[in-house]
Image (cartoon, rainbow, N blue to C red):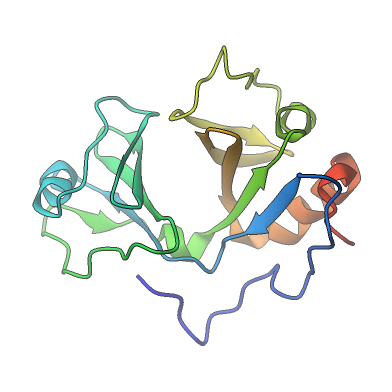
Length: 181
């Protein structure tokens, strides 16, 4: 999947201002990703040399690609910006979940990430409780969201139609990340 030149991204015109210290918000919405679901998903992963995480709500990585398992046969495939998604047709028993078209993708990183997440969700996301490599399907800023936890950062995915609302909430509750209004 590649970013389509005719697509619009709700946060593209909303600039990130210099953040304080090492805290950063990065809008990755235009980055390629793939949602895949169906009983053919594990075989599709194996056929492309990608890991299929052992359990739901876990991630696995290979060659710059992160595979987040969301359900029994549902995954979210993310790139690091250098790797490419497999460009082969999907098998008949797996289908596109359209995660590249329906979700925005924001990365929060920096020393204030844990404190900021505490203002956005009621889940205790301290590393001792939820280690990196985990996936949480929860609510963040009042939206249904998927959080993919990494060492020192978190990727947040939610309904792209609510991207402006989410940015407003971040600007209000997390000023240390410097999103301008």
